[in-house]
Structure formats: structure tokens, C-alpha cells
Figure 1 (spheres, rainbow, N blue to C red):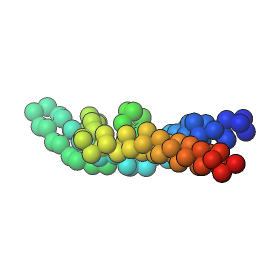
Figure 2: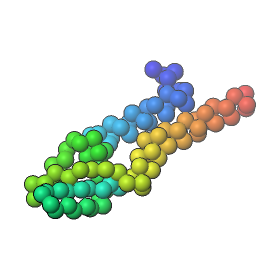
Figure 3: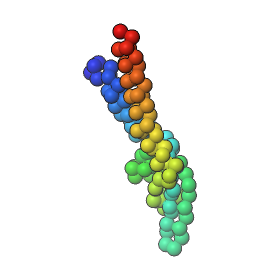
Figure 4: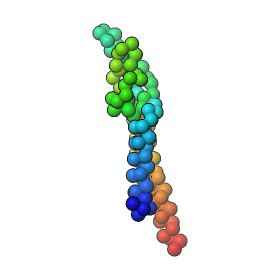
Length: 108
């Protein structure tokens, strides 16, 4: 386990899993999404920040308005935030620790 956390890839995976756990345990509205409420002939669209749990159709009780459950879809900014937070951040940490390890090898 210690050798896994010393490698840059292991640290990046640990950060990825940590972020997923945080976003699954706490319902943090982070991603921009389009909520579509439909009832009969009435259709109402609302731009709002939603959490990862809302995107996965879990814990939708927070979004119900007048008994209507919305359809949740990410817009462009929401997709970019999802990619940056869950893929970009672990990748940047991987690059940082890889560079630090390479610098240590050069100094030795």
C-alpha cells in the first residue's frame, strides 16, 4: 500500500477516489445543468447547479417542484466542470508528483 501511494499514479487514483467519495457523500451543487419540468402541455426549463448525485438520478427530492420531477441534463459548462474536477485534477496531481520524483532522481 505504501509503495502504491509513493507512485504518482497511485496518488492520482487516490485523489480520484477521494473526490468521488466526497461528491457522493455530500450533495454539493457544483455542475451547471438544465432542469426540464414537464406536466401536460406546460414545459419549463431552468438553469441551475446540481450535484453529482442529482446527475446520477439519486437524491432528486431536492429538485422536485410542485410534485414534478425534472429531467436533468448537463450543459456545456457543466460538462467541462465534470471533466476538470474528476479527470483534470487527478491528472495534474499525477504530473506534479511525477515531475517531483524525476527531479529527485536527477539530484541523486
